[in-house]
Image (cartoon, rainbow over the protein chains, first blue to last red):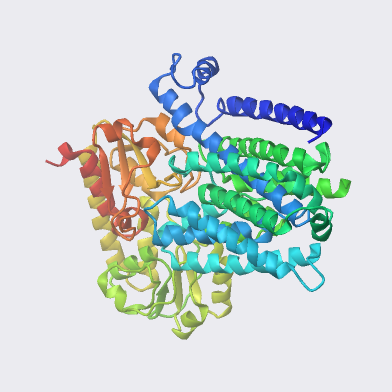
Length: 335
Length: 300
């Protein structure tokens, strides 16, 4: 990496990282219950070792409920934005997004199977979600490759086919489920961060960080792949290997976030776009920037979801779509 | 709740997210866009063939002694046991229009108008009268019983039933009178957390049972509730509707409430969900069960 790129990467990551930490702290102060700001900040600064005058209930709200949820939002947002940035570079298509390509639906079907057949065993959920996402990714990729190669239109069409097919599978399975489970399930399908068990949080955070690092390490190859697979091959990129790595890592990221929170849409469409618009299309900068920006975006969206009609809640997917769709239209018009 | 759902569903429709639309419609059906009682039966002859699209209405039909007139029911209508002998017409969310028409009912009983509005219209297009009800309190349940009794020509028996049920309800209210109301969190489901809000008929049942629901003023019937607000409410007891149609679902207290005074004092009460979620005659069983669980000394 040359010095200018490295500097630009470090500066943008430092700025976004700072904004992320600021968001984690400030959004921890917002919620359906009012917490004293100074004491909460003091407790956060002590990393939970000191209560700083918070009552035990307030302390539990901050550290057992609010902070884990914010961290999960960060992991989910970071995962989805990173995976999308990877798909977009690999498939040379700015519209490649897990939700539009049916990959989220693949993960959702995997999670549903886990819930129906292995309801009690939590770690099966991300595993089957990952398998579902991977299967959907390869289905889309195979469908998109015609004799003339994978055109952007063909890719989106393949995504539509996979999405609608898997949607009907989901509808079919929900119909078979008993009524008492449908309600929680519809919320989950929309993307919901409230019901996740704490066991999955470290898994989701680890996968988000490892995934973002793995894709950033392949950013140079992805830059060359954006010229076309043949050109990249001529320039010495092991196209086959990079493709397998990107698809595996991206599926893992989508799988873990869907297993934790359902299908949160628009993150992968909006965030990498913003990253490329403001920082250029060099993946060495835009992938880590998308990871941090995605985390930031979902944290803010989820804070809106859990506070706007408090003590009631909205699913975060509704908020990301409400913010994301208009923003996306604006971006499309500008480009 | 409902209008919010529909609003978001519309937004989602614009953004072509089919799944959201389907999901929200299911949600809207479950929570109901209520338009209250809307009997549409005008001066028909004696009703002898009726279809029920909700378990509580099936229970009411049998309780007023008109079980022999029931020709169709949903797959969720499992009480009284005789009901299971009646033909099924689908579940509450997906009733089969064809099968209903084939049964030639004069009246179809519907629990909420919600997303079945199109369906209701289709029934009316086929000259089938519909009776729509959605009680928000015990008086509303009594009204449903009386009206269903009138429709089915069993007014006397319905009146008698309402009188008996009212006496039992009054007896409970009398027994808990003067007791200090217990602050209760009503957990509809734990993950994600749902509770009973202002418009749920079970909220009225709790009030009559000497219980203060900590979510009694939350708008809507079945709101999704904030984990931290549940924790902050520090309920003295928790009611888990479970064990009936729910099976073993909802038999654990949600994670946020594991350290609540209710759990620490062992005051978690599982009550048959069929008593508490079906606004029919057995709601009084639910009222008695809740009062006995929360105020045992009042029933010695």
